[in-house]
Length: 540
Image (cartoon, rainbow, N blue to C red):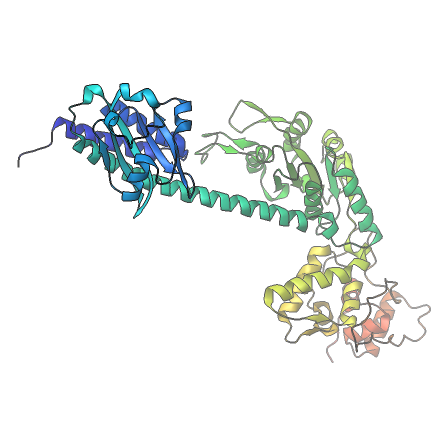
């Protein structure tokens, strides 16, 4: 079969192919459209040329152009329906003007009034998306192209205009999605600021009010902050509050648990790595320090990093500069450091387990978070908060009895707020009714998951043989009353703690809940004491 394609046809196909590559090369629409016009000019000498797109509901304007000055492009703004551009958009059909000097309706606003002396013909085709015309692709032909057949120009420009229409639609979709994501980002930032505002951290006790005062004092500055306290006391929540109360609130808050990763991975996570730095490093990656540039970096469990890595971290904290793993370029960052630990760093320094120079570097401002057992008056508010959140997430209406609240306030809580949260969620999940009673608390049924944990050094005793002094409970719900004080044991003078335990258990038929009430303590603490003294519970 004879091939009817001429060299000019091959040139047109090559041009369309090059145009398609240009349109898929960048998300910068204006830059991309200008490159399309340059491709048309280089391959087919279509020069000058311009792409006119709708700017709003009533105007169109030159989006890209070749052969026109910035002033001429600025003049290329038309009312919708005005001139030849308007005619093309209304009809949705190509327009060819063989001699623009003889066409009174041709405004030629963009090219200037005297351009008719250099330009001869005008060819314009609509840019469509479906049936909607969104713009015009137009070219001029000079005098030396006077004999050119405009049919091939129209055919080629229509193919290019179709590709442009698809690209503009894609870019509009990307822009709309980007704007939506920016709005969502701003909304989430506002929610996070509200959520982690210090005013929304639960804590009416004297200890937590002292913490809040320290946070407000330290947040506006640049000093490194060390948060200290047992696991589960809310160090990350306080770290976020410090960030959102600081001038860096609009920048990133990046966190990393130093104890969760081995040293080799920890170095890559913090400092980043270059491509090929190690097996599996197929591309370069920014570390947490770079990601937090301008913002705040929270290093949790700082006391658990190895001595070797402590030396590497010390330099970054001192100089705020580092090199990526596998790289030699020194990078500088502006990061505020907040660290946290549940270890006794002073003891670790004295034993040689933690570098003294790193200790002094991170221990600029220390904020101590009290354990939950030292702020028991906050427990009712925390319980109500966790229960309210559970009710909202699970569409339930659970309430806590005063007796159950009393039991929760007496517990030791070695896991602190995190353990209390888990206890409430576990109890609420397994509850069949709508009212949490004392017997529903896991420790009252010997189902406490942390009963075997011994209290930390310097903590409260496992069990007390007298009614514990505790903050007053909140007012009971309407129609409810607090339990009456239990009857006391007979004279216990001269009895050891073990003998008192045995006497109470025998008197109560070896029912731990009854014995705990008799001793003025909780079933959970009684369980600790029985285990401590090796007393085997009899099954009657």
